Structures are given as structure tokens and as C-alpha cells.
Amino acid sequence: MAKIYSENSIKKIDNLEPREETVNFLLNYSKALSVIDYNKMKFEALLN
Image (cartoon, rainbow, N blue to C red; front, side, top):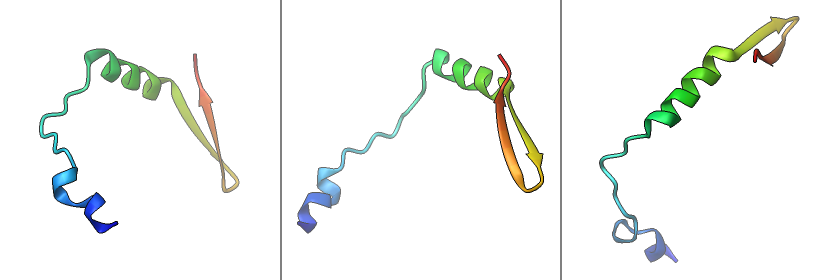
């Protein structure tokens, strides 16, 4: 069982770069997200 998780079985990927549309989606989502703290509770609102 230990050999399944050895370094040889794990593919190493050094150069991971997201697509531009993925970055734009995450940035737009974070701009629209609003977190409101009220009496030790947190409310998340997506302002679209």
C-alpha cells in the first residue's frame, strides 16, 4: 500500500499557469462578494 503513494507514482508539474478567463472570473467574483459581520455572525452577499 505504501508504494502507491511513492514519489515515482506522483507526476510533478512545475509550470502551472491559469487561463486568463479563470483569473478574470475569480477577480470579478471577489469584487462582487461582500461579507457582513453582525453579532458574531457572518453573512455573505453576492452583489450582482
